[in-house]
Length: 495
Image 1 (cartoon, rainbow, N blue to C red):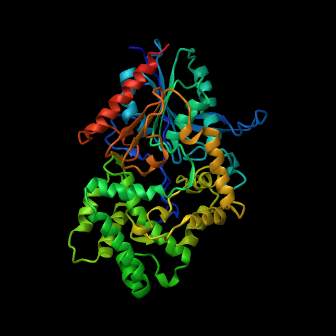
Image 2: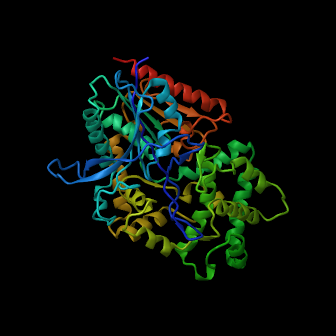
């Protein structure tokens, strides 16, 4: 069995900012965030290391550099008989040393004796290319620069470890990094031998209305009935009516941080977006093996929540929805829901460094991807309370008036032109998606080329295949992990 190195590429979800004991809604719907793997870590975690990275790869003569964080796990590697390298690509959140000892890619590394490396994405976590996050400095934040970071890093690691040309790099990524992993193989095929792209939204789309359509379909799929969807729809209708007739009742039930009397139109849109996001988050991470905000696996599932809101038919639907919202608050150790639009915008205008990454990811959505999970796809269920113009306005309010609809659409169109969207043409990439994950609507779910197969796992959620195996894993998820391993093995046996 040839020895293999492992560097893994990871995608992260947009972070929901937390202020004191409030649940603060970021104002845009969920991103991809891989989350942390569950399970107990035995032994020490690998220490962080730092790589001197170029600031602007588009200008070769620009010699400015900065320090980029990375992690290495050499436990499974035989330097006397060099094998493959697995590269985990960082995404829109901090890199974590826990992923260096846990996850499906670590099981593959043990199998193939791989060296594992994780490179944090520029502008996230502790990888700070510029002095602050001002809009003029964010010009160096893009998927193009991130891919060039990876290429430059691979070349440097090949030199540092004195790897010969026979050593093969395999990239791993989930969510936004899932796209990066595929694009890395597309753009730098001479550096990356293969890629596992998990839950990657390859198609940049500004009005991502399909997101909530998948959420609603998942509620039906997992419960096998329409009752859950009907109750969610009825609850939103009741909320709309009661905000006009008896707003105090909604304020109390949903534990709002401020009364509707002081709410602007944008506050209300933010409120509706927030309670819809309760279901988005529930579906996107349903029954996965990740660690939540409170350091524990999430106990709530689609089945448990739908069971709760379909029981007691005599009880008003909005009260049952509010009960779910209270569970969400409790899971995040928060006491009230802050839906203030102005507060959200002011937080996103903060140009000082932090760990969450909300401002940075919003910049990428406004300049490259869109990905705005609007209500226009499921108006009957959630109401048309957070349409596309609500998100475009956020781009303008945070970054300036030029970030208008034309600007945002142009950025997304260019991303699809450069990378190909769902017409991407590249070999030795495996695309993995779960049917419950709303992001599969923008990904490759059917095999278009035998050299770039798609694995579509019925009943699983966002990046489910990347988490550590569990005895509770459904058979199709177990089979998918085995299939992924077989593809990696076949690639490594190629000359």
